[in-house]
Image (cartoon, rainbow, N blue to C red; front, side, top):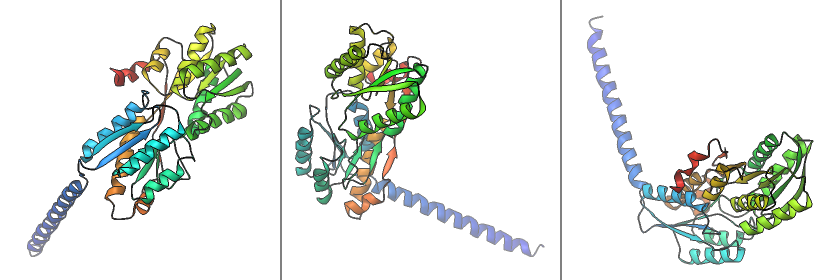
Length: 332
């Protein structure tokens, strides 16, 4: 046994040396990786949306900027002033002409921007979709809410608030992919799960507070016994609440979408029953990382995009007057 002790000692020393070499190698490799993951401030990544003045985009842009800070790259934001397809296409074309390092795009229409998106990809400019998809374009990834599931959750919440009885309506944007999915999930759930409820009307609020108020007034006048309205975006929710207040419909249950300050205020004072909050910071944060990975890849832009997840669900939560105070931090 004593003869074996020197052998064991040598083996232990050699094993220790091996572990040291492995750890040292990993450390240097990780250091090299961190260096490779640092870009240049000359690398300009652009976020493109529509209705650029609304609060909704602030958290997505904050996530985009936070990721850019870690990667040492630059950020530019471009949002069309209006809910206008041609305006967004024009802005996207202008962005492409400047050959940015990458584009994070929320598509106002699921098909009409395909040619422009593909033009960017073919020019070697990576494009990632967030919030609202263009699924048939060459952009490889979409980061956003599972909007069909959001519609299902919305139906369940409104049904719970109404004790699973009564007429309801939807105010939406029928030509935008994410809103189509929310509406479909909501309507299918009401029809298949709640036999004592009925969706009596679906109208276009155009993503505009005043228009949404007008169409809500139309619904409330046509169906005086209606019990609830689901608005698939924040301006719509506020507009519905204004209509209900104007027509003294105090018992109307209103379910909205997203968490701008006015929506939070309306939940706090009881004008809106609840809203569905998306993971918008996560959309922006991971969109930047996805774009950076494509830009830094030795592969072509299209091949690099195939290595990234096709879809990332960025989460959803329900905001009521019980937890609304926790959502005010972004507006202080």
